[in-house]
Length: 307
Image (cartoon, rainbow, N blue to C red; front, top):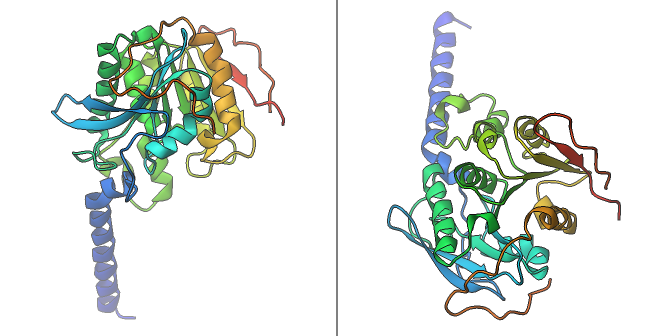
């Protein structure tokens, strides 16, 4: 092969590489936020419709059901390919136990206006807290829960507001840490717009934290939660053997969350209900606890009970 031919091949391959990289750069948000087609913003059975007003003037559909007794209200942020229906599945046992639920639907999802992006989703999360506060639900009665992508929104909210607790299921240290191994030939850490830097923000969370992760999660490996547990304060880490990235929908996950909530989410009065409130009837659908660490973080590791 002549040097001229080799040069042409090099130039052609370089052009192809840069074309692919540019295509990924300009389509990255479509890849990161694959809103399900045909998803409905209608509230699931047992929920009432809520409208969240964001700082930048958007009106977003959400779903709400009030708590019973003095239990906390859960604000749930779903993953990037999910919907209100999936959020309902992920919180069904929690709602059945009497906890209040506000299921947040993101901008650009299920017919909501706007386009998703990191800062936009943070605005959506703040709008959810504002909606509850306007209805008399105090910060100390709010627990924010984030699954997968939603862990980025939940961590941002918990780092900036004195909520009662933070739960991350299949969470990550940062979005570049998730995406870079998937595209090792692309300078992801330079090009990625949406960072969702949970590792930096979780240090600022003062509320109790529960981290749950499946040991067989190949999309976001469990080391992400292990790393977060190492830098957070007052955290419990639950590693679920053989569970994958769909952990949040499992009975094991919801049972572990309920056990943890029993210690942090009870001292709350019932919040006001939305107009067109849903019916009060609930819609129904392995573990050794280690001694707390001697460090100031008071961390511990939990594993689900067998069976």
